[in-house]
Image (tube, rainbow, N blue to C red; front, side):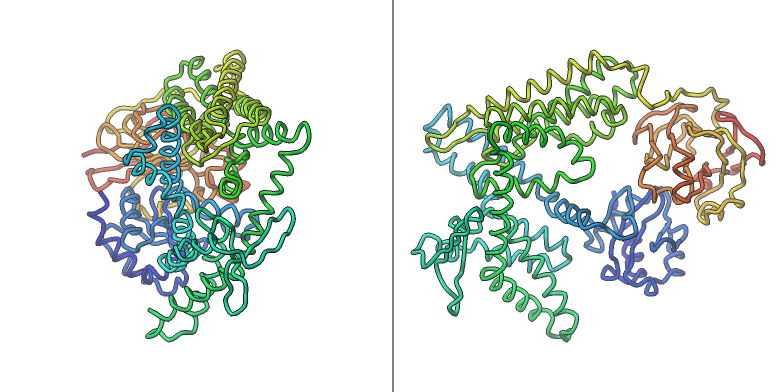
Length: 640
């Protein structure tokens, strides 16, 4: 529990200049890493004097508070104490340098949509289940329970602008509830009711749609979509972004005594009024043009729907790897809102089934227990719940060919969707629950026929992927991945073995100030001659990252194996962890593989550190002297 570290977290926050001085916060395996607006406001001596803080390092634009093995608890407590929810990546640091326009857009979309995907999927699943049940039991639609459950299903979609406003406000770093006020204004009943009144005028812009207005403000038309802004996406995002600029500008010059009420008042007024008069119509224009562009591609004669769906289905997992898939989610929601159906994400129905089938085939052919332990949950996650990242990164992508098989099988499923004209009518769950999204509950509509088409596409994708992978997969000949075999060790209780073959270097002679000072505990370093790192003890994995593994040995020693100096900044590129947290390891088991070339190319040192982090629990922790060492030979002796 993080509660025991609340006082420490509050003290750290207070002495880094307060939460308002924190741009972002993340952590690696030993350090809470702050990005501060003004590092001169931080009181480093006071922080280093805090009980629980080992050292403070200022490097690479980061203010790093070294706390050792309690880092996750302290990090959680810092987020809670400072109200910094979602304040940083748990495993990676944000890279320095300029970002491309594409990366900024993807980051914004993913940051805004990720927090709401859970309730969005839950509401969609309920909507799909109700549609399926009422298809077979029509009278249930007249029952009060149906009304209550439909409120669960449709309420979140109707008020989607409010949820998006809150999430976007957080992403744009404005007051979240000012953002909510903007979102609420878009679904305010009086404004919604305007669209049911008399049309005062309209403009026909061809493929961009017809724009009508139902009222004027000082003679300026209030142009609104016929369905209003309920369930809309782009209008609220643009309005909140504009509001964040207004709020930031006002805070820059307004006296502190007036900020509390005048900043939100002015921000809300300007954003909502201009939102309805200017931003909303422009956003609607953008929405219509995007939908028209995709419609044009998918409606090309003969090959449009089939080719377009095959491309989306086949490339979807590639987009997931780079985070570009987020760019299609708003388009899908816009299609559902403007057209009543979506064909873009409909084409991805087969990807989870294809990936799950590929992994299942590999699971059946590969008898390695460690691999099977990773593959089985990844298969279940992809096949049943549509969460593909564990399977992509942990199983298919390292195999390369298996990933290609999954993508091609998904493309075939997408082509079937395009060929049959299957459409999604709601945005709901993933995996098997995604099939419910294809039910058309409108009177005289397609009913469950499109769900049947989706089932066929999913089955074809899964069967094709399974057969091809089962026939071609060779567990003993992984492409491009050398087999990592354990090494023989001289391990016994009270010893820590060398994790790698190389030359012993004393900590005091290394370039990492945290380790060389002994602040993390006694230990030793090895200049590695090889690229495979083995477990120095037998025990339980406490923490596992690409560059570092912490292990609780059977004799009670807590051993940290850290590969390289500042290699956390490589974000896993060139480093692969082969164990999971809470896993049991035996001395000599491979735990990390790394590329010396990539570490050097990143400008880092590949020194491997072996630290007994609970040194104070022992009477003696004695590292061996300098000289050559082989993996598995004793390198540290501990005595209680």
